[in-house]
Length: 208
Image 1 (cartoon, one colour):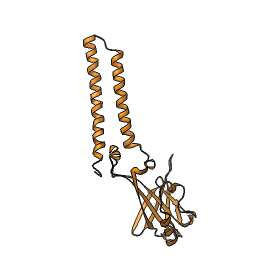
Image 2 (tube, one colour):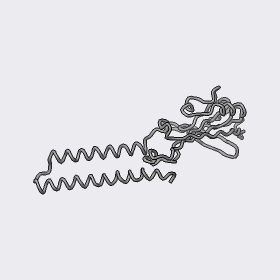
Image 3 (cartoon, one colour):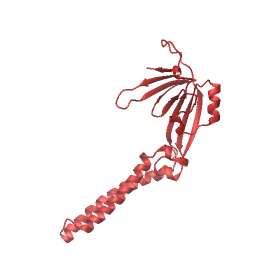
């Protein structure tokens, strides 16, 4: 477990389950009592109580579901920390391709096609999806998709100059170890990863 604060979220999810069981049991008991004592299977009072219980439980369940599964990382502000690492790219001479390149692009097929970018750094090979990565080959290193993240302008300029616009920046966003993040079982966990692949121009990209 990344943080003991996540125990808070676990306890709340157990409470969601317990309250659901209690609610179903309470509805059943009240209906049986209504039939036995008043010889009716329906009453407006019983329906009102059941409706209130159900609405309260749904709000509880909905809140926990949103906090755990549907939060937008880019809207969490100071609830997350960001770390960025920069590495120079290694050029691939690509036997048989007739040219040198820094990144290869594979296009998938289907209703929602996704590109896969493959690149090399010193001793490592990476493949990332276009859903959380971008290739920048313009004058400005930080293109529109990458601008959603914070970048060190001095480091970006330094890498552009030192490595001839051939480097990669990887942003990792991590949930802080706090009570609020623990409610959603996220405390200390990786929230997201984004990769900026910087190349001099599009001629250094091999499309398959």
